[in-house]
Length: 62
Image (cartoon, rainbow, N blue to C red; front, side, top):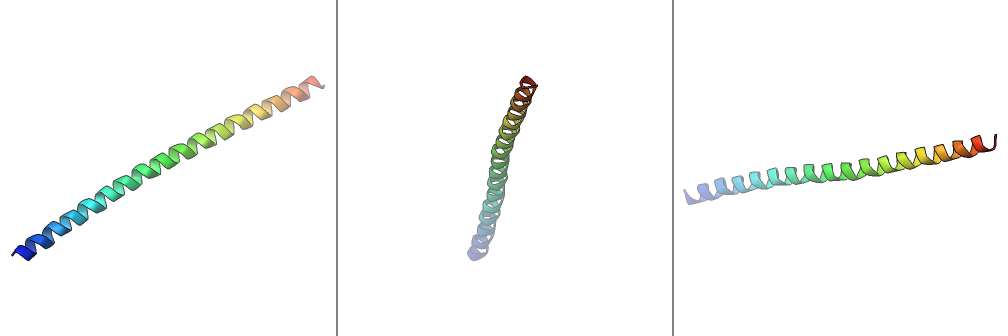
């Protein structure tokens, strides 16, 4: 009986550990995506700025 309770509680601990691990992975994935999206946004914005500057230089020279 004691062994059965121990096995049962061990399964619960394992289940809780797996659930917490999955939650942690999801949070980490969201943080990584947020960093990636911000980096891409910054790269995209600087690309637009460079393009506009190049266009202004071309307009200036004719």
